[in-house]
Length: 314
Image (tube, rainbow, N blue to C red):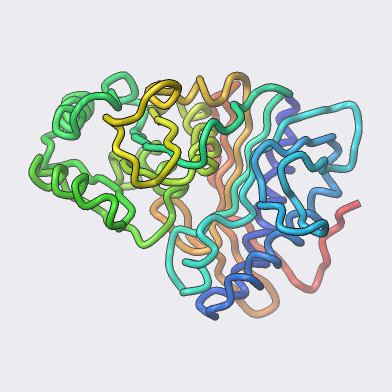
C-alpha cells in the first residue's frame, strides 16, 4: 500500500471529527452523526481508491451512507477493504463527554474478518505484555502476568472498563486484585487503543462491547504490535463459560486482521491518547494518529485548519 494513503486517511477522519465536534454537548446525537457521515463521505471523494466497506454505519434506509457493502473513494486500480466509524460513541459526544474518535482502517481485499456475532469480550494491552494475556485465564492471573511483563506491581496497573451493570463482577475482580480502574461512560474503541499505546497511563482494557469496534481496534493493535484477545458473544450479558461451539474460540488481533493495514483516528472529544477538536477564531485544531503495520510507524499529528480556505476533495 502506498504510504501516502495513510495521510489521505487522516484527512478523512479529520473532516468527520471537525463536523461532529460542532455538536459537542448539544444533546443532539442524530445531527452529530449525520454531520460526521456526510463529511467523511465527501472527503473520501478525494481519495483515489476503490474502497469496499466491511464495517461501517447501520443501513436504516436507502439513503444511508458508509454502510457495509458500499463502495467509496474516487475509484482507480487500488482496491481495498475498509472498516470505519465516522465517530465512535456519538451519544457521549452529544452529552459533552470524552472518548469520541473518528477512525478508519484499510487493507487489501480479504484483510478483515467478517463479524461472527454482534458483541465481543475483549482484553487489550501494550506490546510488552502482548504474549502474557490469556482471555481464558482469570482476571487476577491476567493482571499478575501483565504486571510481570511490564515489570511493575499489579497495584501500579490502570485498567479501563466501561461503567456498565454487566461489568459489576469484572470490576469487583479487578479491585480485589489491587489494580486501579478507569471507569468509562463510553468509548471502548478509544480505550482499547489507549491500552495498546505507550505513555497513555492506561495499561489494560477489559470488558464486553460491540464487535464492530473490536475489529477496528484490532487494526490499530496489529499496527502497534500490541496485544488483543477477543471472544465473540451473541449477547452482551452472556456468560463466557456457558458459550459453546464457535463462541468458545479466542481470537487474536492477527486473526481479525490478516494482512498489512493502515489505521487513522482523529479526536472529536478528548481521550487518553488524543485531544479533541479545539475551535479558534477562523478555524480549528485537530489531533490525530496514523499507524502502519508494514513499517511499524506511529505518527501523532496536530493540524491547524483554516475555515477561510475550503478543502479540495477533487
